[in-house]
Length: 148
Image (cartoon, rainbow, N blue to C red; front, side, top):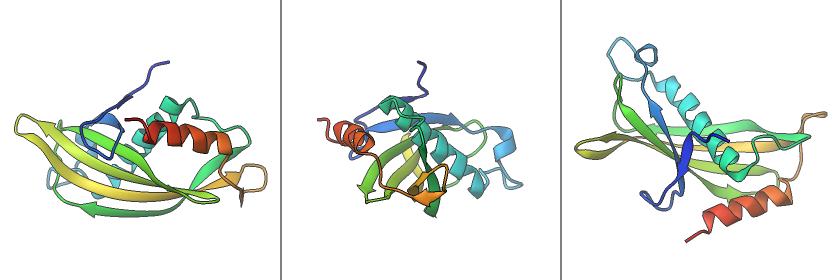
């Protein structure tokens, strides 16, 4: 299995990250990443986090986006290399809140670009209703997040 993300201890409390190179089509007339383009970056990091757990597909349940809060700190530009960090901040009965931070990786060190929190609800695919987060998935997250 090829994984686009990687385990890391560079930015505690984050333990997982994925790289993203800014494409020309992702920038606006000012030459910076269009603000909405960060959502797919966060999606890729979360998906790779799940791939690392071995759980991209959860059978008859999946996650649906409930809420996203984003804070923009600096503007990334075409060809910037971003490292998108992701971690599980909280697991509720039927929801998971992920914490994200995007840093530009360059010769001057890392520059924080954007932070975000995303809450996803676990749903039964057949009924589209909220259901409890599977225990096996909870255990895998706990094992990754609690590693020294």
